[in-house]
Amino acid sequence: MEEQALLSRLLEEDRLAQKWLYERYSPLFFSVCRRYLSSREDAEEALVSGFYKIFSQIDAYQNTGSFEGWMRRIMVNEALMMLRKRRNLVFPGDDRAYPETRDDFSIDAELSAREILSLLEELPPGYRTVFNLYVMEGYKHQEIADLLGISINTSKSQLILAKEKLRKLLLNKGIGRET
Amino acid sequence: MDPFDIFKQQESKLHEKPPEQVWKKLEKRLEQHRRRRPRRGLRKPELQLGAVALALLLILFAAVVVWWFVRNG
Image 1: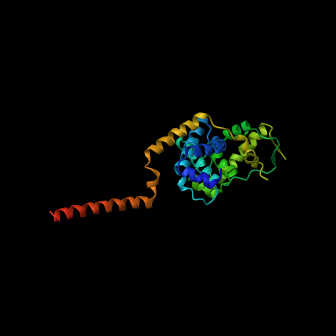
Image 2: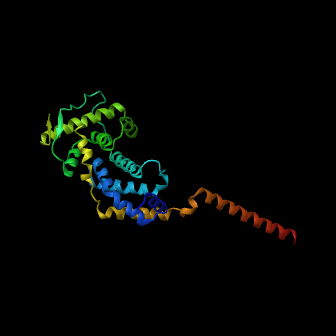
Image 3: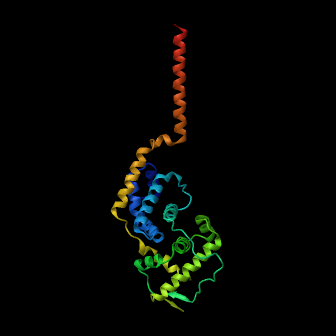
């Protein structure tokens, strides 16, 4: 469906257009929610809230930037709100300058979906959230700091600690190796 | 290349169709939202303004009619 035609129909609250958009993007956005939230039920709840916001605030989309990017930001915000609601958004460690993760490391094998999710689930929520925002969504540290209400240094340190933990997990599982 | 970029590269593997009841839940919320809201057309400011102007004109017209009948017995 052509985007402008779709947007017009969404503005009219056309249920078929809403269903079409949901069918197209729900697998992607469900995976976004699953990456942030350990509980599958919470991920489903965040997905419902995210789509509800997309449909009920469709007139707020300004046509400046990609529609998918706009929807994705809404989904990420919903996942973050769910983390806050569950009081999971804590940032262990401090914001001192940790050394960057060593680059003498590589990941050989293809990771399966289950491996990716289980690795992310082993990270504390703070590490995992910053890792998701920085590596997966491509946010800058300043944006992450603004979004989470933390300092830039905390964002940087959480990322380094997340990578360090992942590196150890990958080495232990024999998926990653020192180079 | 950052070795952790592999997570991003393989993100599509995580795509998963959510259970059917998720759409049903969403549809129910959308239906409640639709029932709560005023009709879409009147949410546009120019239409709201038009409706107010029309109501004022009707009141004015009624007032003139009443005044005319009172004056002419």
